[in-house]
Length: 248
Image (cartoon, rainbow, N blue to C red):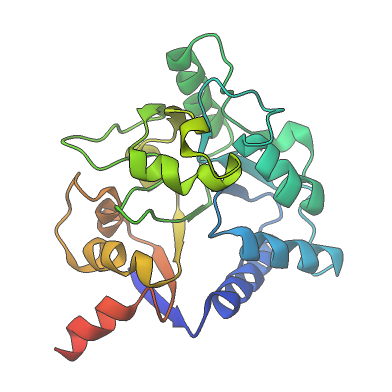
């Protein structure tokens, strides 16, 4: 893992956006894996600014999202599809035909997951995958447990994860669906390059475990230690425990 520590979230997000925009200039038909949540919002905002300033053209980019809530229609304001339409697809002018997305209202979850895996393979795989990390070390909706699923699957959400997503449901965790479709850890590790972003002291324990702890299903992000090309983009708060352990 390559650790990159910035003074704050704003600087980290801006630098990552500029690096990603440059990568798209070099590879206009890039296949991007994208997350939702609060962490990537400044990244997406800066990417939109760069695109509007004509620093890059995203018209040939293909995207696949990390996850989507189960039994939540795309039209629901709390859906991840609605989030991406607001913050990414409309602002980067990515055509609907180039957007890969899990359907939370699909008739059958297993069939939907298999189709998603096939679509990723047909696109040539993920060139770059952007990730966040939960305070419990989850990646996407791959939650800590006795085992992890390798491929896209229907996941049950921990109460802590539902609380973290309450912001998209009027602050009410009880309104957050209890299940979601999600890329598996094998799918994630199949990306050619991974950029994980984490900000704030609340993420520092998970980051320490991810970087310095054992590879364990009890902290899904630790599996990124097995990948050959991972950038870990942090602010000083998220890196706090790493700095303390190195000083000790």
